[in-house]
Amino acid sequence: DRHHVMETMRRDSAIVHNMMNLKKPVVSAINGVAVGAGLSVALLADISIASEKAVLIDGHTKLGVVAGDHAALIWPLLCGLAKSKYYLLLCERIGGKEAAEMGMVARCVPHDELMPTAREIASRLANGSQWAIRGTKQVMNNWLRMSTPIFDQSLALEIASFFLPDAQEGVQAFREKRAPIFPTAQQK
Image (cartoon, rainbow, N blue to C red; front, side, top):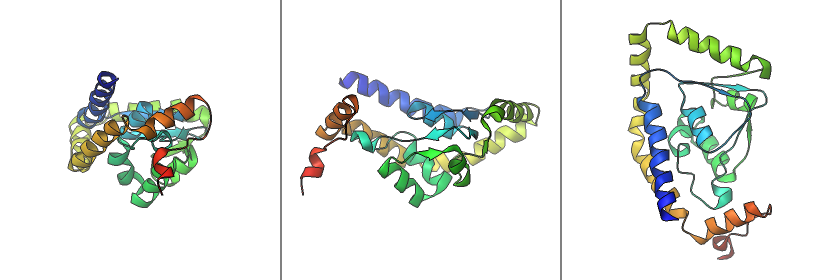
């Protein structure tokens, strides 16, 4: 349904741009599986904290779709191009501890300490100099703004890929709980 796909594109773009442009800092607490829009919000937050039980995964290519929403924008800045390509192309899962070690999140804490830690960080931000904190966020997010053309292209390619046979096979395989057999992989 092209109308649904276009609405998805609008929503995904709004999530990314609103997270970048929000004046107040955002703290995310990742306590389980983070995928899709939830992963976008988690990683685009100004400070991301993960539980030891957290799992980050971008499953786009497993569904035959371009990894286009937040991933092309933020992943290379967080953990580098080589790791980004590895995890995005192969749809490998990243545990909370590994996410912290590779720079995807600021910290990994024991599961029962996640929310108290996130609240303590949010409190420190709320009680700090708002001018300094907001200005620092604005300046740091210029790294993201400079990458906006990458984001725009990735989102357009993601949306276009929804209409291709690989995506149809990927979704069908997911529903049937089987490995996909992508048409483009058969063209040697």
